[in-house]
Structure formats: C-alpha cells, structure tokens
Image (cartoon, rainbow, N blue to C red; front, side):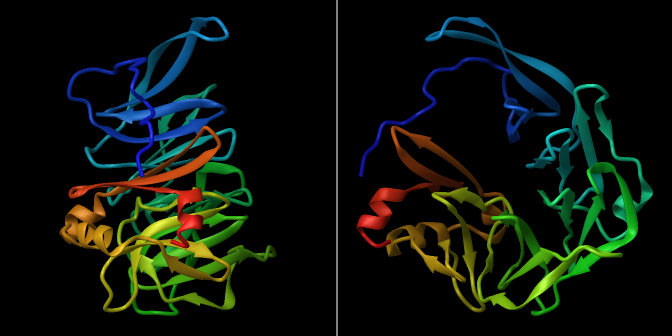
Amino acid sequence: QLFPTPGLSEIANSGDFEVNRGSRTFKSEPYFVNGNKLYRLNRVAGSATSFSFNLEELGNISGTGRVSMSDNGIQLIIVVPGTGIGYTYEKTNGLQQITDTDFTANGNAEIVVFVDGYFVFSTAGKKFFVSALNDGTNYNALDFGTAEADPDDIRGLHVHRNQLYVFGSQTCEAFRNVGGAGFPFQRITGYVLPKGLASKFSIAEFDDTFAFIGQGDNEAPQIYVHSGNNFTAVSTTAIDLKIQENTDIQLDEAFTWSYSAKGEDFIGWTTATGTFVLQSKASKLTQK
C-alpha cells in the first residue's frame, strides 16, 4: 500500500555530514545526538499554523555509533553502548558524564530504559543493573539482576505497561518490581518467551503493544509483535527475505521509529537492505 511520506520539510540543520545517532522527546521537547553533539530543537517564533525553529547545542557526546536514550521526567540519560560511557542531562545542570565508578561494575551499559523510578541498563553479558531511585547519577555495584533462563546473553530491554522485558538473542524474560530491600526486580515465574532480539535498537511501542526484529533458536530474523503472552510474526515472506540479506553486523545497526498520521499508527525499521513500514489498520485487515 502507498501512503504519503511525512517529514518532507526541513526545519533545522545541525551541519553537513552529521549522522543522527539517536533522539528522544524529553519534557515535550525533541533532543538529538547528531555527530558528536547533543542538540535540543527549540521553537523560537511563529503562529498557530507556521513555526520557526533552531537547534541549540548542549554538549559533546563521545563515539560514532547509535546511542540509547531514556528519561525520568527530570533527567535525560544517554548511553554510548559498549564503552562504559553514559551521560545525564538536566536543564539546571546541563550535560554531565556519569562518574560513579559503580556504573561499570557489572559491565558496560548497552541499552537504557526507565521503569518504576529506576533507570535500567542492559550489558553484553547476562547482567542488567539499575540506578538509585529517581537518580541517574548514583549507582550501587550490588544492584543488578541476571537473565539465566536460557544461555543466550542479553541483547536489549523494553518496558511495556510498566513491565520490564529483558531480551536475549533467542529468548525474552519478563520482570516486575517486587520492592523490598535489595535489587527491586524479580523474574515473573514461567514468563520466558522463545523469541529474542536480532537488533538491540529495533524495539518500539506501536498500536498499544510493541514490535521488534527478532528470531528464535535456529530461526532467521522476522518482524514480531507482542500479542497477549506471546510474539506473533507479522512480516511477509518477501520482507523476511530482504531482512535476512543483512549480515549480523548490519542487522545490529538497524533501528526503528514510529509515528501516527491522520489517525493511523505506523512503525518502521531501517536496515542496510531497505526500510520496512508496518501500518496497524492494514495489518489487522490482512491478519498480518
């Protein structure tokens, strides 16, 4: 099906050849990591139908690859995967690197999400760890959990309906906040799903659920949607074949984005072999 493409008008430019590495809406304002800089898009003038914008440079971000971003309403967290480097941004204190030595005590952070007052970080091993309550600058080396239902290592995290999903390469485990002393998250008994992540940046909320590029044990990558207590494949055979043309490295660099337009929900994935978009109403009508 053919739909109009959004985003055809340029409203600001951070400079030539600066690659976008990630974005996040924080306090109702768009933030972007372009090249080695963090920017905020500010609306500076306009009427109800026409606006003028500028990009405000907020500080330096190391690395060249994609970043992971999350916020708690007060602090914006930016993680440079695999480097042990993370940043906090607050409007009062600006951009600062996380200096607590316990931030890397359980491995280098890969993906960050926020749930129940905690920033939660995945690592490249079997551990995930949390910040102090409502404080992305403070960490304790003992505040970590493990995903051990299957021998695959953690690939990414997602929060849906206040429930934490910890994805490996072949499986997914669900955790919830049980409170009490010590590490606050506990795996939900029996909630281990036989699909994992093919790309750590491929998960996004969509149409009151979430979708991702994943696979099970000895399976090729497909696009899946969370449905009930399971994952349902929604990509067609033709799209599966295009996704599977990516190498493992290329697929690891794939990323997702979602938006709504004229009452319809869309989610897309950009890979080295093409960009694929799923539209909620068409998916339901075709039962795919």
